[in-house]
Image 1 (tube, each protein chain N blue to C red):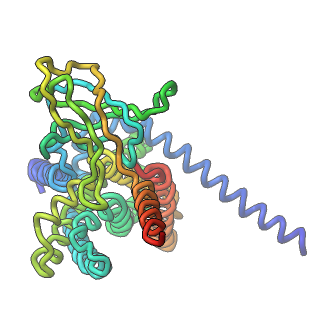
Image 2: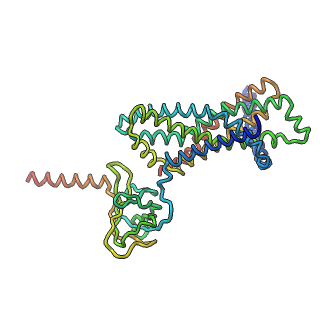
Image 3: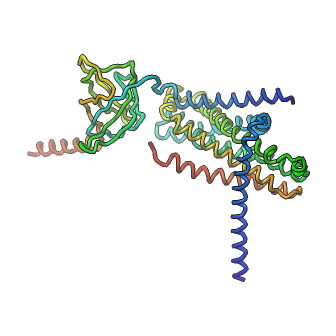
Amino acid sequence: MTRRNIETLVGLFVLAGFVAIGYLALKAANLAAMTVGETYTVSAEFDNVGGLKPRAPVKSAGVIVGRVSSIALDPRTFRGVVTMELEKRYAFPKDTSASILTAGLLGDQYIGLNPGGDDENLAAGDVIRMTQSAVVLENFIGQLLYNRAAEGGDAKK
Amino acid sequence: MATDLLARLGRWALGYLYRLGHGAFFFVELLKNAPAALRRFYLVVAQIHAIGNYSVLIIAASGLAVGFVLGLQGYYTLSRYGAAESLGLLVALSLVRELGPVVTALLFAGRAGTSLTAEIGLMKAGEQLAAMEMMAIDPKQRVLAPRLLGGIIAMPLLAAMFSAVGIFGGYVVGVLLIGVDPGQFWSQMQSGVDVWDDVGNGMIKSVVFGVTCTFVALYEGFEADATPEGVAQATTRTVVISSLAVLLLDFVLTAVMFSTPR
């Protein structure tokens, strides 16, 4: 086999390898849907972030507008501070509220943004004041049991 | 005698340590020769051809078969919990994280490692390596280093092909034969597989395995007894040692990379 033939075959091999890597990255791992382009950073404080994870989507009206970049505990207020990166082309009013929602009954948690009516828009570094924490299933069930018990007690009287 | 046994144990342990240290120095020497091999890149290209191109068929066939089986077995288990839509995620994660790098490395040890060991062992037995040294050509630079680089370059590409073909195999069985919803199949996969944490770590694994398998094959070939039996034993040792090393390293790497769920 001549040198040129071997080089061509190796070129084909390397190309096939890169196609496979690209296939894994784009088709299997969804690299294309990650937010690219310019973003701005906004944070929000929650009483309870539940099972929210970094890189979870930030949605408004069901459309992905950004990603959670980090989650930390504020050592003074003991509230969870969620930092998120929103795409530059989406601007939200200053009184936008953020809530932690769950996709489906047992799905992953994401942040939902509800736009308010303020004239000014959120700028980079702003903090979203109005937040609604994640629903913790245990607390919810506990509340339910408590209410049922209270109702049962009333009926017996 | 007890002292005899003790002495034998000590000899065994010392011999083992000696081989380990010898191997480490050998590896460092190969790395030192790698830049020289990179300057004559055609040598590396020829090795990628010998190691990589000829392995594509066996890798693709095995990947397809593994994908088929993952599709069938995954569906069997997942459908019990009414989660058959997660089949795509199961197939992709198991391939990209574990099966792709590991099975590729095992096949690589059998397909390419053995031929490397036998080739170099026979070169040594035929005194070709000695003849090179007489001509003031360093066989480590001219023969071994290009093979090491070729193996390191070929392995991640082969592993990626294995995973890609395997996912296709899982798609064929899961979606086309069994009838899982194709949209769910892909979207569950895409939301669950992370580019860096899963695909990237899988690639790192396969690079590590590429270094390990190629190095073991070269070392065994270079240190083989220059007899037909010596080459035969060295070839056997190549498969045994590389397979064990890959499986043990895989455990260590998995523990380091994936121990904490995100």
